[in-house]
Structures are given as structure tokens and as C-alpha cells.
Length: 596
Image (cartoon, rainbow, N blue to C red; front, side):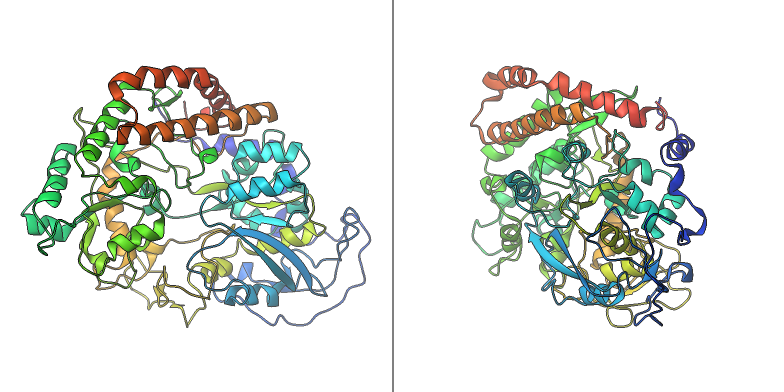
């Protein structure tokens, strides 16, 4: 039986592996290695944090200290002192672009960070969807790498391999020299530092902490409420009732335009939980698709009651789910484009000018598939998890989303690693978090009057002026290592029932009773040998599972004729080895801590 998490054990790990990570007060170490340059007072800062505890406000630089390990790097200011350097330096950052950011170079946050730090960011923008393909090419090409990869979600199996190959810089000493807000995060959340540790004892990438309980249940599904009302149907509660709804959408013209133009169900190949199988398959067998479409970072695995790692995609219940999806496809209820459609094309269908035509779709939120200030988003409401034919009614619960690793990697080609880490350390302030999520205080958001009620209840932390999902030039949005002190549902509650945070919070409340709380931790500390084998097997098997899923659903493969061959191929590919490797890493890092 699963017990409550034992965080005391993890705190002991931290003290054992990294006793120097927690010096008192984050004071500058005047005696650390290298000769210090003469103190150069710089006067008052030209910028001041807009929000947060005064303890974490940046302090004016009082002098500069060199690090002899990196002779090409200029001396840097003390811990939590700014600017970082006396003369401006360039830091090349490769990061996946966020589609709602109109300009990274002239962005308000870019300008703020440069003014604060004296570090000029040279942006190299990676694809928004599946950036790891481009990153792998960059590493394999042998060309000069950017100083930093930011927001790329490197899996632990890749980090240990990059570290062993000398492509990633170990960061623990740099954190010790320059960390202030990072150390505060480690003290506040004892799970954070072990999450960042690789099996060899090195930290190869910084992580982040994301406070958002609503998004732990982000595998959402949306149904056209106007269609339901027009058809005189109630909200479906079972897979059979949902099937009847889809048939009615196809045959009974719920948009009342006299044409059979309705699409009962459609998904996409990219986007936040836009894949067609994520939500629906959970009515038959547990299905974790994570939020990343890169096969290297998905597991589709779960933890059994006795702490064993297992998968659903070789079980009879998985086959039963495939049969259901194939029935939808064969009867024209599931759009064939669901296996090829891009995110923006899905939005185009929802926003079709002629009429509302989409009956239902999977997505993390309405802002993903509809215009955030448009009218069409109001057609859709969250469909609670459906009960399958065997009585299964569940949804993926991202239990470990708060602590993420692999968010900020300093490469071997970075000649200014102290500067890179000191720059990143400021990203863990509340000031940076509010700027990167909400924009400029007083212009893009404001602090609500005392007593303002939040979307989630309690006291509101902010009121939004610049709506999330609006094209903007105020912040970077997502792909950044940071420490979220409060979540979006802590904004002041509006009178608009279609306001995004209100909609997502209501979905969280509806989904919570069905949360499947046995997901595999996102971070598993593999050894180098395990990592190589895991990366090879996991990508091969997950790609095969997903390709086979599409082929079974579309009828290219026959479930009666080809299912046993599918199972045989999984075993030949090394499924048992994959499970054993995952189990070994889980047992080493998490089994005792999670009470198994």
C-alpha cells in the first residue's frame, strides 16, 4: 500500500550528497578561489524588483571577483549583487519559441534583464514543438554550441549521457559560488535538489518549481455545449453515451445550417494534450502521454500498488480501447485528420467562420484551440472523465509536475559559466516570475485590493490586465527555469464565466475525484549505462506504440489479426529490459521516499 511521501529521507540525501549547498544567508564568500579584482562601487541599481519579499531584491554590486577556472570570463559581482559584470557581455541562449511572443529581441523582459544584469541575450529560437530533434542535431554536428539551452526539458537519461561525454557543464560548484535564490528554493522544497542530481552526483541542468494544482490534471477534453443543448442531450458520463452524442452530431445537424458539415471528434498531432488517445483511452486503461510530444520524454508507464513499474499498452484493456477508437473512426465520428493535423489547423476548424462545426476535442485548455477573446471558445465545456465498459473512470494526474529538471543546461562551449548561472539564479525570484508570467506591474497586471477573492477561493494575488494567450511583447511566457510562488488561479475572480482561469479551475474540480495518482516521477536518475539503453529502448518502443495505435485505429492494422504480432514485436524490441531499467532507477531514487 502506498504511504505518504517521506521527504525527510530526501532531505538526508541532500545533506549527504551536497553539504555545501546550504550556507547561511547567501552571503558573498570573499575568500573563494582566485584573485579578486579591486572593489568597484557601482552605486544604486537602475532597476528595482516590482514585486516580492525584500529579502530577495537585488543588491548593488560592491566589487568583482574572478574565477581562475574560467580565465576568459570577466570578474563577477557578489551573490545576489547586480549588475553581474562591469562591462556588457553576450550570453547566447537557445530556447523553444513561444508562439504568443511577438519579439524576443526587443521584449520588455529582455530589456529588463539586460539592464539589471549587464548581460545581453543573443537568442537562438528553436521550434516550439519537439525542439529536441533540432537539439540532437546541434549536438551531433560537432559545431559550436550556444552557451545555454533554456526551457528544453532534457530527460535525465540524456543529461547523464551529455555529462559523461563532456558536452554539459557540471553546475553544483557554480551554484555554490553564485546561488542565492536557488538555495532558497532548495531550503523551501527539499525535493528540488535531488530532482536535479544525476546518478553520478553531478547537476547538469537546473530545474524549476511550478505551483499549479490545476495543471496536474491538464489532460482535459472539451465538448460543444451548444450542440448538446441543440440535440436535447445530457452531458455524457460513459463511453457509450459519448458515442451516442457523436452519432447525433454527425446525423442531426446541431449547428442548424442545413449541411452535414459537423466534425464530431477531432484531435491534433501537436499541442497541449491534443492527441486523440490521451483522455479517451483512460476509460479503458491508464494512459500517460505527458505534455511533450517527443517520444524520448514520455513513458506511458505507471506504478502499481506494490511499487512496480508497468505499462498498459500491452494489456487486453488497451486493445479494448483501440477497438472503441477504431469504431469511432470507422463510422466517421473521428476525423482522419486527427493523426496529421497541426495545432493551428485545429484552431482553424474551431474558429471556422461559416458555423460552429467541432463537436468535441482533446486539449489542455480553450486558449489552445480557440481565440482567447473570441466567441467560439464559449461553445465548449470540460467533459468529465468517462466511465468505460469495465467501470474504469480515471484520468492522468501529473503528481510530479511541481519539480521539473532539465530546464537550463550550460554547454561545454560556454566561456562564462558563472555569469550564466548568476543570470539564471535571478530567474528564481518572485520578481522575475511575475514579470515572465504577467508582465509589467501596473500596466499588464495589478495587485488586487485586500479582500479580493481568488478564482480558487481565498485571497487573490493578482489581477490580470494583459490576458494570457494574447500576442504580446511583455514577457517570454514559459520556457524558463523559475520558482512560481503562486498560480494563475490565484487571480481575482471575475464575473466572466468564460474567463480562462475560471474555466480551468472548474475543470480541475470536476476531474479531481478521478485522478490516477500513481504516475511515474518525471525525473529518474539513470546511470550512464542505463541511460544509453533506456534512451534507445524508450524511443523505439514509444514510437512503435504510437505508430501502431494510429494504424489500429484507422484500420491499417486489424486488431483481431495483428494484435499478437504487435505484442511479439514489443517483447522483441526489449520491453522487459525497458521496464527493468526504469524499475532500477525508480527503486534507487524514489521507492523508499514514496513509501513503497
